[in-house]
Image 1 (cartoon, rainbow, N blue to C red):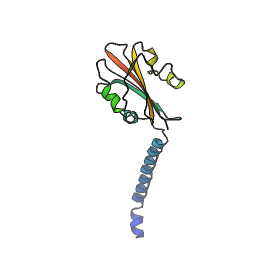
Image 2: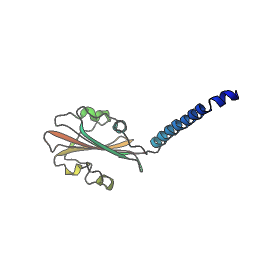
Image 3: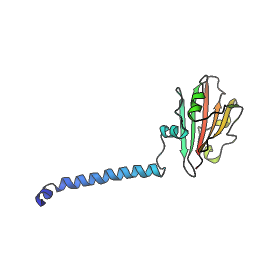
Image 4: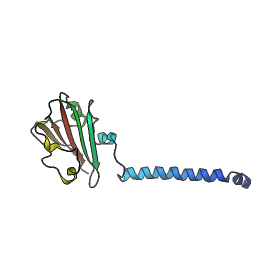
Length: 159
């Protein structure tokens, strides 16, 4: 038996070191997901808001923070004639968009640092505020450009 280990000592060391490296990578990925160190992907943002982006969504931008609670900022554009009802229903929103309503009257300090987040520049818009009991979704649809609509969505967990 000793001859077996002696003859394969180099391969056993390489195999053991490989197992340690793989275990370290797996543990690192696990820790980064658990503690929120890894940047979210768009799929995770969609899962968080409870809806897939509508077909035709373009110019997609999003960011997220997890200091006190999970917050997602999402911006994308759609053709002007796109019906938003299916998108809203996926999120469980039954309220209608209200003309000239904005849930974003002024940028908070975190949003001021997000260069693409500019709902306050909208001149023609509708919006809504939705509290599902688990998270809050705030949505503004910028209809200033007659060719497209830009959606600004902020969602945050209540727990």
